[in-house]
Length: 84
Image (cartoon, rainbow, N blue to C red; front, side, top):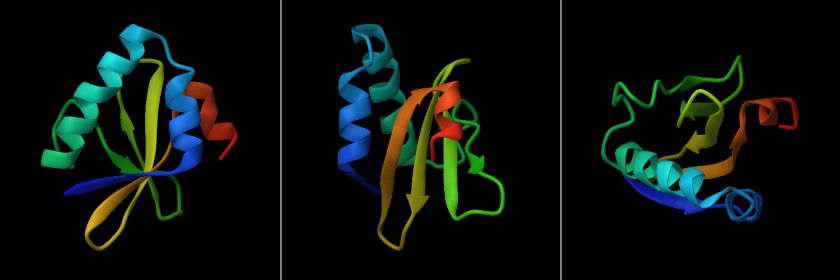
């Protein structure tokens, strides 16, 4: 599945440390290959059409599942879900 990035995602990605970016990159590859990969622990976020995947204990990726691609909405530390 293809990945598309929002400006919000790209801004948040740039603020991550080098090591966090490496972890996010690895998990984005997993997401593109298989949404149900066990290390992603991907699930819907509440009653919304937004999903999230776990990168580490502290970092989450928020995205929408669209017809032909995943739209990456935001990435960051666990507390970003309060900002969405």
